[in-house]
Amino acid sequence: MSAPAARQSVGLIKKAWNEIPDIVGGSVLAIIGLGLAGIGLANYYGHDGDNRKYKYGYVIMRPDDPRAAKVHKD
Picture 1 (tube, rainbow, N blue to C red):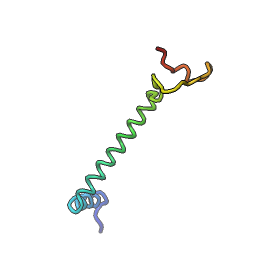
Picture 2: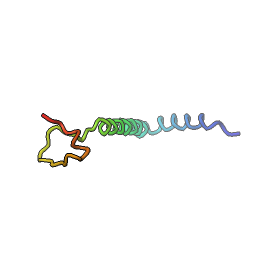
Picture 3: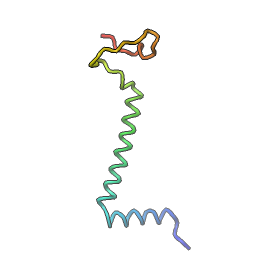
Picture 4: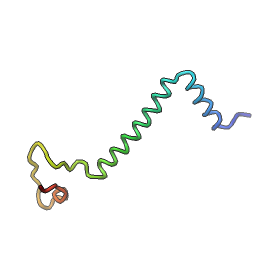
């Protein structure tokens, strides 16, 4: 009989940590970084991050453009 899959995967992670800790630690940090980048990107677009107050050039929008309602007026 073979051992349960959960016990095998934990053993595999422990063995990998003992043999190549740099790779395992770096992989964990990379996965955490990708998760945080995804959350940051979702927040950026969720809070209309592309609507900058000051731009380098003029942007001309028609009054019926949906983006025109979100433009900052100062």
